[in-house]
Image (tube, rainbow, N blue to C red; front, side, top):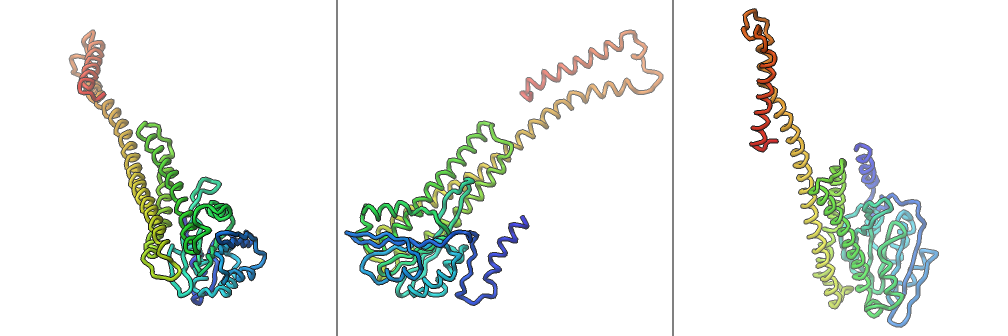
Length: 358
């Protein structure tokens, strides 16, 4: 626990004492290469390129076509800074881009909008991974910044290449909606998998087939639910602000689509709240099961002790070292005593059975 706390503290220490607008990368994926991919399209044409130099991106800034530029590699701070200079981004925006612990939010500027959200997916170890995605909406372009290669935008790339839907016919605000919608749609699969895990644990607990380490699994699921909740809930505020925003880059026809994203987020949020309640119920159920098992053990031990109390009492009386105990000199006293003890034992067993204590 102490080791983890140190790691968290070090991320924040990187910003302590820095001038506002200083670019400090706080992520952990510093071994990946810088990759810049561009899609420049309109209704009739499309150009897909892998840009070799960051300076090549600025040529798409003032075109009449819509351009999506995706940049992987936030640890290349100098390149990110050059992109900011070319597209006129505020230093605080660039600082938030490389700060991977940034909360989902939206900032409005005169010539562009800046949106931060969290992309969720399962890694190789079946753990939920959270990656920050920063989006900048300009007049005819959208910039996306990610830590590393691999995202949930492949379906968007295919739609642009094949000209499916409205994406090739509408402006850059619709492209922004499409990218956000792709991230939100992936939330459903994450929440669905979490729900299946919770329901399986619940079934095992009811059936009495719970594993020995089920408390560890419940705790792990609770942490995953809270992690997902922290990533998803603030995004509702972002989409709500986009719906109500009066900015020349957001057209009225696109507001309806953002409203649909908000509905999806509300549905995901409701499911998360339900699963969180189920997790707490599972923990209570597990503790109740453990308590019931302990009660059953104590019940058996109490019955055994109760049966032997009169037997021990009789044995204690005739074990005393007195000279005048008349029964000791009786020829069949030993056999009579055994008979009385067995009779008491059988009578108490019969009584407990009748009371359904056994």
